[in-house]
Image (tube, rainbow, N blue to C red; front, side, top):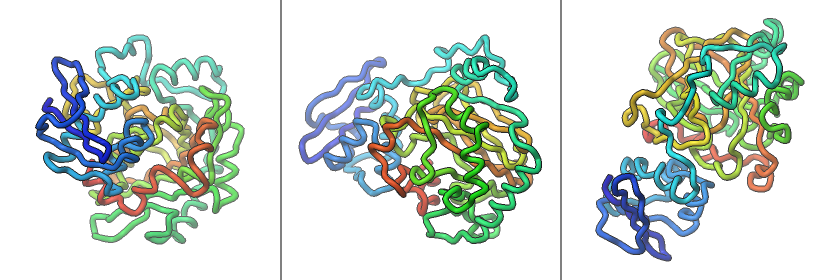
Length: 351
């Protein structure tokens, strides 16, 4: 891979990669790509508080030579060099003893749930909520969706195939609904959300709170369909990883409605944002669910929410459990995704 230079007011550093070995050099060496950024931006990038995607969307990167794609290819190597985060390699992940199609029930032992979750980075628990509970929750989602408006900072929007703007995500949803708040605080959700980390807790008033995903049918523009990503893809890895995202399946999900896709065993590692063009032999699981099921995934497991192959319509309420350190860094109403909420088309273009 060609060398890259990162230049700040305090100096330049050039990175080279030779036979898998990265070297950092002071100064300019005539790299084909030269990225110019501020010292605070560079510090955030180096210390895993914000990512190149966040800095680019926020207008904090300038390219004297080269472009964003070359920087994106370098990001996993920079994260390994500066933060010790390994680069994902499917050959190093041993899932030979794991039945990736396995599902669980609330009656199963915590030890069994946890063993699968830690190995695969995700978990599917059947029949956690009743049909009646999910029907009531969907009525609340209908109410919140009808009240949403573009730019309200309580929702994300995408353009449907007819050119109409449609709400595709409701954020801070439990701040506006007693019923959804009851789901967020339900003992069943609390048990699953703290399975791996008993000291973690939900953050209803920050990090976009508990959010409802609404999958739109057809070819949309924006982030109705989330491409391969890690939940720290905009930043915050050093602040909130690992955490657990609990997905309450308000409706069933399948390929037709746009279900959750996961690269099992990828948690705690870095994958290039366009890994599917760079890697072969990567296992992928598509999680089909029924209304009332619950999924769990680790924040930095590589996952996606693909475009529905059919009618669309999946709805999932995501309740995320964070480590206590989050509250030292992120205040009420703040989120690493703030840079995305009203720029979903620009974010889609970067992906």
